[in-house]
Image 1 (cartoon, rainbow, N blue to C red):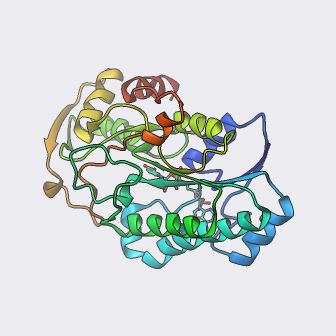
Image 2 (spheres, rainbow, N blue to C red):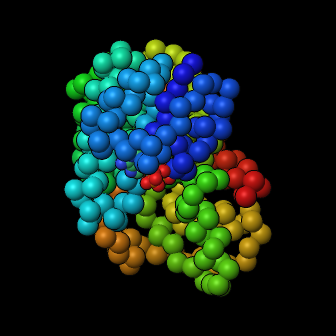
Length: 277
Ligand SMILES: NC(=O)c1ccc[n+]([C@@H]2O[C@H](COP(=O)([O-])OP(=O)(O)OC[C@H]3O[C@@H](n4cnc5c(N)ncnc54)[C@H](OP(=O)(O)O)[C@@H]3O)[C@@H](O)[C@H]2O)c1
């Protein structure tokens, strides 16, 4: 299978390249393929003539999106639209990675794939615009919403916690945001399985289980044998430029309906991650 990957130097992109290494990969980054450049993107993809495109490129700085909203909508909205037009012209599927941030967070049950979207941040709104553009343009798409990613390549919550613990004996972490930490390696394996099918549609794919950021940090320090006093704080006590969804657990319904095995528990995944870094 000839697979074109965008944003392939990102956290997920790096794991996709590794997991799909036995396929023919056209790996691109923001220099070789800037997805906001419509004509260039369409011509580039047509020239390489892949069997499928995986879009792991995005403007992922959630707080930065609040002040750079034009860039957010360009990369996260227009970019996926350009890719969708190219895939339509070649009649090939597009895999697009989206986010729990398309939901409001006002829920106490896991979000289903067809629940109403209602993003509360610029990042979430721009990612939703990308989803909508793909749905309008293409029939053959996999839109994969995931959450709370961490991976071997790039900065993430677990790495930030380990860094902070070097100079702090006490760390405050929010305990009123609930979600599912997801290892990009596990997500990349799931994507490698999904692209072998024609079960197109919207998917929620995360590791199993859920926790608060506070619970997650306690687990990280316990597994890493680091003695730090973790203090639970509320989101209100920890203001950030972009609002975060309070509850963003994603029910992996379509994944399970198509007889794929649920991804392993987040506790198992973080344990492996900590052994690997
Ligand atoms: N991180 C999370 O917690 C999380 C949670 C849910 C969903 N997601 C989604 O998962 C996907 C992967 O996220 P990630 O954490 O792996 O992101 P990441 O590490 O920030 O990687 C994103 C990549 O996109 C590239 N990029 C940015 N603008 C581009 C452009 N105009 N054209 C082409 N490439 C561009 C960046 O390349 P340069 O560095 O060269 O600019 C970067 O390598 C994204 O769609 C994200 O929205 C992430």
